[in-house]
Image (cartoon, rainbow, N blue to C red):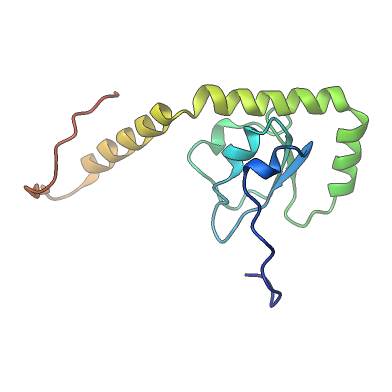
Length: 142
């Protein structure tokens, strides 16, 4: 929703990386770009907590990112803090990058989904039937 204004020109994720500070605002759902912002090694200001992705619970405010309330009530103070405490801000940015780099590789994501689906299958009240056109994929992770 652009509130009646024309949408802004799209900016690629790579073009975000030269900036020292990046803001993660939710979209219509989770923004799905937070993990990419961390990979820029920029300090991430994460706005609001209404929507989550599966790994958000492992990210810690003031460790991996700076939390910002949805109403942006203290955003200027938070920016001033980051400017005045540059070494601290750089350390937060580095920890955010390290977390994504070390814990959110494709194998980690596949492991999450495999475990989710295997556990969900245990909750089914019926026995699923296999479509013969589908391939069986052997579990790689446990």
